[in-house]
Picture (cartoon, rainbow over the protein chains, first blue to last red):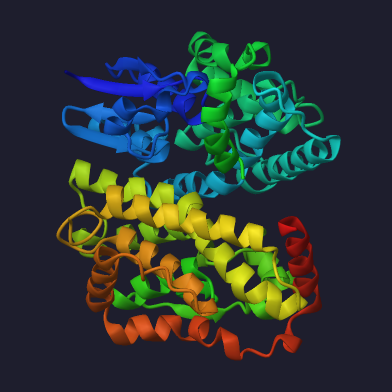
Length: 240
Length: 241
């Protein structure tokens, strides 16, 4: 059994891994774990990842959780092109800096935007107050500004002239609020231009394929009561 | 000007960087950024790090934030012993896995405990509602359980037989609630034993020195708190209500 990647393309970090593996022609078996059906909470999946989250990797007997760790593992094992995670000390540090920063900032705001705007009302049938939604979207706005001012600045890509893991992780996160119908790039020409560059670097077809699921998030059929009950605690913990 | 590290040892991420640099005899200038006096919001510091956070590293013109990035940078630049960030593909992945997970699972909740048990009541004179406190303590308990079951298991250290960056980061973060007299190590002898091993490997004197400011937090005169910091803390309290 070769490399297995346990993914649900609804999830931001799963999309980054999917794109990275495909772009670098890393052979893998796709194991779909349907989040909206609660499959990540099963005992079977806990054998792969006791943290009960996607993405997860299984390479022979070796299992690995956490998208950043998985991306770095794939980078090293498959000896991908240098620009993804440069050898240069300072360039590499910039990628590390972004990958560390995003956990509690952009990842979080994008997740909350999707859930407060779409998934709670549409999928879980739970209304979200206009105040709550407004706060979430305002937070997203602040984070997007930081992304532009501190990380992108006037560069072509987040860390310099070439696309890296940082751009992949960032762009897949931004697609969450895009999937929720937020106009993320409106009034942000710098970010919009960067988005087009990353899409081109990855390949439009691959980018589109990876984002089919999230772009249909607003069409999610409502969860049945059993599923809803099962998912609620994990969802609330996730977006806190 | 050599390597500068902008730190306040009240912050767990600063302690990780401090301990690692000192342990490896990496020469640096300690630039104190007093969080309690709001120095991280000062014009001077914003020029160094517009994100207004500590720790920051300044190496000539190169400025770097995020403790995980700083730790990796120091490892590489100063060619520290390989056990800190093991070269073996799988072992390194275990360190990366912990370093990624800890941001939301350990650092955030541990830091929140200190806020809710100590800083918020001390500064605002008000207590955080019991319900919220219970929720946070439950979150911490859950994280500690996951730490033991998935990350530590029956190993001596997170990556195996030797201490790595992951252990330092884990321990300094778990120490954070101690500043508010809350001990997360009580429920697990496995974790308590791991803690002793990590402290020993770091060196008790260095470990103690790094944690001195945190452990004396109760003695701090909160009337000297920067008004802007106080305002933000009061706002924070509102979020918990």
